[in-house]
Image (cartoon, rainbow, N blue to C red; front, side, top):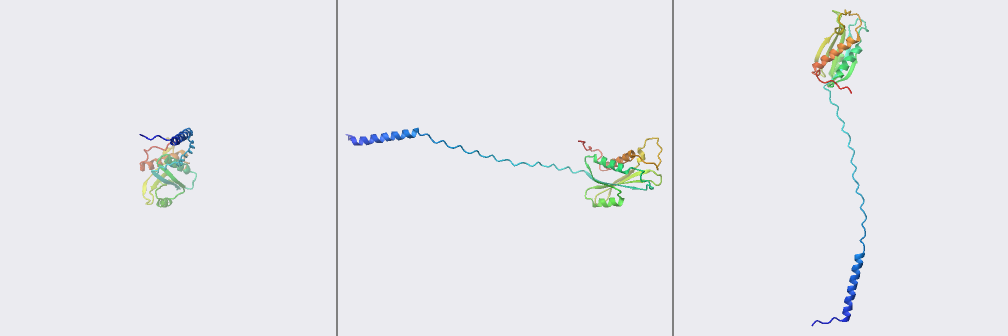
Length: 207
């Protein structure tokens, strides 16, 4: 038969049981401490992206233009060569593939050849305005010298009097009008563009 539990042992068991119940109740009623919120994670600031500069398209043709006058018999006011130079340069600049790097007045042929020899890429256009000693007609002759080699790329001549109104008798001693000089210079520009096969390309857009 099992031995009876003594009163003293029973009391100890009851005390232990009560203590266990009390401790469990206290733990169950205790609130867990609320954890502190985490600080926000800083987002990395994106580095500014520098805009990529578009490289300017390299022109198909770069030129230096020089004008010279001779055989005017002392009549400096016979022609407006400055207007002719502007007209030629403007017509070349109208083409999107052409860049006129420099212009010079009173450039001799030897100056033009030296300039071409010193150039690395630019062609030198030499234009000579003169009076033909045989018939007295004003003529505009041109030569295009290649850079470094000074080889003539193209050459030719035109006559401003071709652009006078029909029926007008030309006197070689009279002052040539600005319009005739400009038209002759534009004709020279067109011929040069054609020699470089640029005459059919689109012109520079006007903005």
